[in-house]
Structure formats: structure tokens, C-alpha cells
Length: 195
View (cartoon, rainbow, N blue to C red):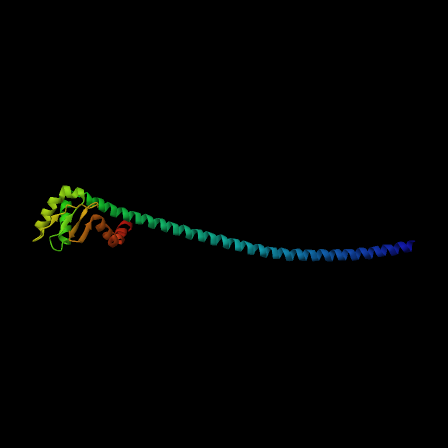
């Protein structure tokens, strides 16, 4: 039996050696595969991180652009509001000039806008009552050969006047004058306010 045991021991030893060789080969293949997939995983990880960083940077840049545009829009709106307030302030100051200065202003409007010197002067109700007769007298005195008349009609405007000759009217209201100045002077006013 010793011979059989030796044969069995020998077969076992050969089998164990083959099993150990197969196990070693399998472990080596596993280690190689593990290393290969770890390298691939690291590459994928680096790519994902780069893509994430790029996406994050793009998002931040996009948000910054949007915030910048919103800020510029807000600043522009504020500037426009301030320019509008400047013209509104000019209008208020013009309408609250002392009586003599306002009368001189109106007489100047009549002088510069009259064509024949026979136009009717239309004022708002308050100005017609307070300044009408004085204005006609002053305008006639300052314009050679003029025969301006105060119209019985009053206008619905804050200040200034309308000169009427037949069906033709020359609008010299403060509202229109300020609007005309706004179109011409807005850029200059903005430069003064914001430089």
C-alpha cells in the first residue's frame, strides 16, 4: 500500500502544484485586470473631474455675465431716472421762477415765436389771470409794431404759452420745450451727472 500511497501522494502533489500554478496565474491575471481597470477608472475619474470643472467654470462665467448685464441694465435705468429727474427739476424751477423772471421768459417766447406780431397769446388759467395783461403789454412793447392779444381761451398745460394765428398754433409750452431740450441735451446732462 505504500506504493499506492506514494502514487496518491505524488498525484496530490502534482495536482496541488498545478492548482497552485493555476491559482498563481489567476491571481496574476486578477492583479493585471485590477491594475488595468484602476488605470481606466483613474482616467475616467480625471476626465469627469475636468468636465465638471469646465462645466462649473462655464456656469460661473455665464452667471457672472448675466449678473454683469443685469448690473449694467440697473445702472442704465438709474441713469435714465436721474436724467429724467434733472429735466423734471428744470421744469419745476422754470415754473417757479419769480414773477418778473417768468414774465420776461414768457415775453421772450412770444418775441422769438411770433411771425406777424398779431397772434393771440394762450396761457393756462392761472397765468392768464396773474400775468396775462402784463405779458401782452410787455410783448407788445418789446416787439416793434406788435399787436398781440390775450386769448379768452386758456390751455391745459403747466406753463409757457401757445401763440395762435387763425388755425395755426405755435406751441411754446414748458412741457414741450422741456421735451425738446431732453431730446437734444440728454447726453450732455448724463455726462454732467456721471462724469
